Length: 467
Image (cartoon, rainbow, N blue to C red; front, side):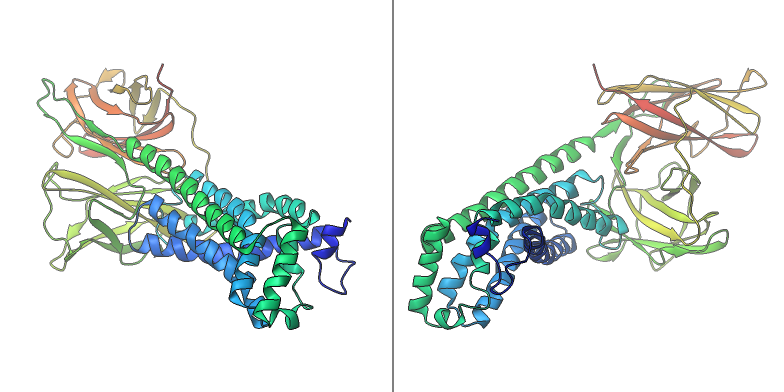
């Protein structure tokens, strides 16, 4: 180990390996970053801030807590703030910057993580994973700096054997100036300027990345219109949504998110705005609320129509047959605008997720054959036609929700919600117009009514890239 690395070690502990010192330095920075990140994201999420604003606050607080953890032992040893602050900037700036860029990048890359409520395990799981990745990336960076007498090697020179000197602010300045000259780090003012520049640059890069991702996400949540044909349905808007518990000024408040497997359970929720539970909803298709429930592996699809009580609570009976995490969507319309908000439901027990079925063009259900005719490309309006036959003959489907059929599409991975209505109908055919905003696989749930019974046909559709 070279002389620079030896100066970065605690006195009397010359046998400490460079790897151990780098690991401790990385853990030290990670602790400060974690405190700042969690606090910033919690505050931003609680206040309903955008991803960019939440990340900017989280990065700022990560630097503040990172520097603070470095300064505390120095200040306790009697070092003046004017001496300790430049040392903290020299020790931590680059390491914190690397960690912040990495862990915020991971959070933005995990689908739905930044949009998840604090009660959602996805948020905390993604955050823990982001910290782990940040540690792995920052460790070799810290090791490289310490081996050259920089980074945490600078502040470790003052641990345990500089207290007396540091107690004198004038002497402390000399010690710091001497440390700066040995490490080639410059004057205290320069160190502070470099640290502030690193903080501002990191906040700028992280915020810009969040803004780009947020803009892309907003573009994905495009409004799709059903262009009415001679079927007489007119136009109706549908949005890719259902990724958050709140939207359009409303929040979904579920009374109890934990249910038991296989038991019929009273289930209630409210749609809340700034004035409290909402009681006025538009009637759409003869109902005022669609409650869609599906397990996160896209099985166990249910479409319910709860009853609105006088206190603003929607109530129904819900049976979730198997253990797992389910997604519950409240799909409603107010003043002509459709909104979909969603929350996770939890059923304890042994859970074995099912693999998403491969794309197929037909499915058999209860004696009906349902064939899907449609080639979809991202960002291009697609005509999707279902042909319904029984014993080889086209079926004259009965009206369901004042239309020939009802279609919900869920995107694999984040379960983004796309709700469309039929354009027109002919004997044995139900057609829809939809624009899938991204390539990937979608699970399509078609519901129609035949012989007095509601049938659900589930098929996987592969949406390709637009040419």
